[in-house]
Image (cartoon, rainbow, N blue to C red; front, side, top):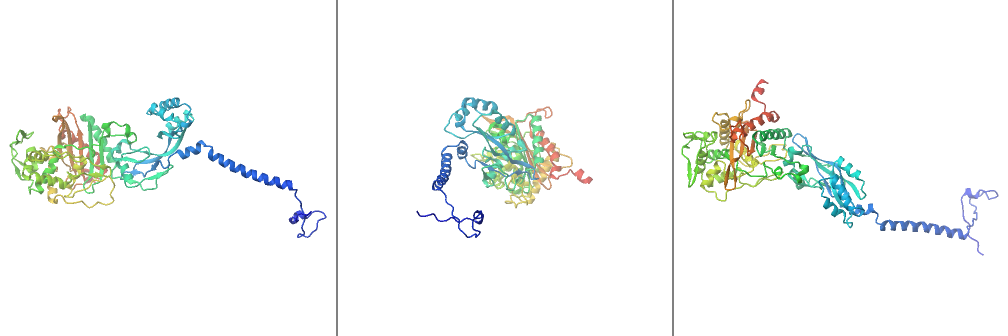
Length: 566
């Protein structure tokens, strides 16, 4: 029988009593054949067990593994912060819990739906019951973007099959104050309106499987939160004082087009937009068009100065009403004498504005309004501005009514932008909600500097003159120019005499404009102070004075008496 080959071992094994001292000497070690076979079997069994466990785990359908595969990837998006022109935070993302369910693990869909609806009353128990009873589904959202208190309540329910996922949630520290500007997002944190939608349109969002801070630079708006708050607060007080249904206010940089403030009341909570009242959703600054009344005479004055070559001293015979068939246009307070061009604006003469329109003709009037941008479809970063409503037939009668503020409906922002071009030296501007590092070049010249200066002079006289309709906007220490406008709102069968929009357009300072303002009160009522009247000179004009007194220092416009004391 052939003997096995010797197994060489190291010196330690060979150094036993009686063994040779030579480390190279071979020592023979024999292993029984049965023990070798058992070792191979044991090793093979270990590998088989590992392979079997792997197959079992892959085929066992572990709930956590299936859930991870069932959850949609990149359901949410992270967004950059939004700040005002001074860097104050207006919108940001926070890490929040969202509640989901695995219907296959829900033992009692009826009881679970009832307990969830009791915890979150805004949820529909019937809809929950239907979705939780479908055991073929493995993932259903219950409520997203929970507050910490809501998350704790859901956790305390202790219902198997419910779980949480961390997601970015959009929050708005200023809530109502900037709601019509900021807009809102959907449950996946995608912008659906306002600046939030603009952020998506310019690609400033990032898909995320888990919440994290955006590395993108904040979106800096032109809005000044302090001025915005002052406008909102002043308008809210005016609504209460004059029992108005709504209000709007704009503060616009006359040179750059930056929108310093834009307020629409009633306002909305951007975090609860789907449940907001329809009236709260209205954006009266950009989302609606209105006939704004006699503030349109500012435009008509520009037409006379620029296109007709008139001067402020030119005389117009306004003693007789204008007649167009069965329609008669007369003065509310006839002066009993002819008026100068300046007096047509100061005293708000409908007949005078009509005479200017008749002299200019429809084609020239329409071309002038188009040059100002009053007939365009305007858009800002917040979205499209409501399209102007132009009469289907623009004849001589329509030209006369448009001249004094009826027949052409525009959004307040669109009028403010056009009027800014009339008073800033004659340069058309483009309104923007974004902070401008430098003053952008104007789009085009719409009137001459001389015509612009004459318009400013007339607007100043409309406030400073004792006969001016805007005299209640006069404020000591400030050089305010402006024009009132009271427009009856259209309704079924014609205009509603007691339902008006009272507006005041202001230039500040009048000699060297830095800002233009446009405030409007929707359907104000007469009060004891106004002796039952609802005209803009009695409500919108004094409201504007109160506002300028508040925001003047914020805009680095100190009253002259204070500046002189320094």
